[in-house]
Length: 169
Image (tube, rainbow, N blue to C red; front, side, top):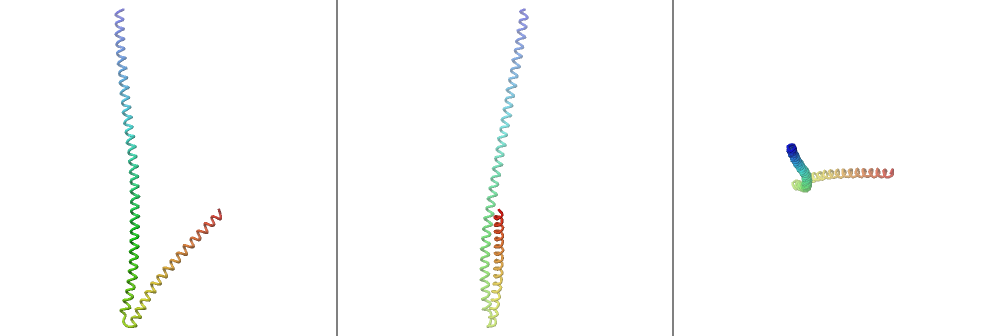
């Protein structure tokens, strides 16, 4: 009986030992799995953080590029305005110079003409030049009048259409 009890006790101790060993292994396995899960979670969080940063950087880059485009457009507009102003000034100077040159040429023609006949011819030529200038000026004025009348007619037609619409409403 003592021998049986001793064997039972030894067997029980071995089973307890095995059980403790299994429990220890299971606990180690659980700890290892927990650590792996936490590690994966941290990696995922870091990846998400990096993705958010990239998205924010792209958004900022796009905004900066848009601002740069707007600034370039403004610079182009300013440059075009300056060029237009300079061109208009040059045109005005050229017109003034042309008028002076025409007057000087008329005077030279008159001065160079010899005798009454040549003077008369020079005056006649000067008058012809004036007549041509007047003609071109009259044609320009006629064109302006035509444009104004067409514009006025268009505005009247538009007003009539608006009046018709209002009347229909």
